[in-house]
Image (cartoon, rainbow, N blue to C red; front, top):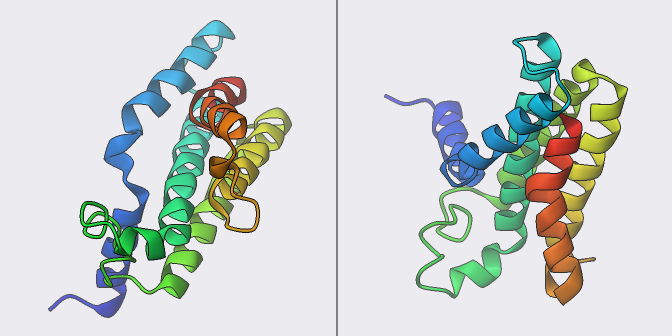
Length: 159
């Protein structure tokens, strides 16, 4: 029998949608280290890679949390979003989001002060992009700039 914690963790994992971003996070992170001349297996490389993966996961997760009500009304999105499908409670999803964000910040801190500062900017941008109080995704120019920064430029710069 599956424990309640395991079930919640599995459903929270679905929020990350890691299959949608894993490849480009690997490419931008490794490209950044390569351009910097530091592409060798090291603690900063691993910490930055994990920080970048978790930062993008956070952005995808908080987007699904904030869009759950809208996704519930969309036949295509209702089943992709575990919150709108009723599989994960919004409170549990928020907790998962911020645990992932804290993990990302911790990995960035291990990588160094520059990756930490840039990584925290990435996390902040991920929040502001979807958070209903700001909603950068609803502002045409800010939407495009957010995507460029969040999904490539800041990851590259962290590396």
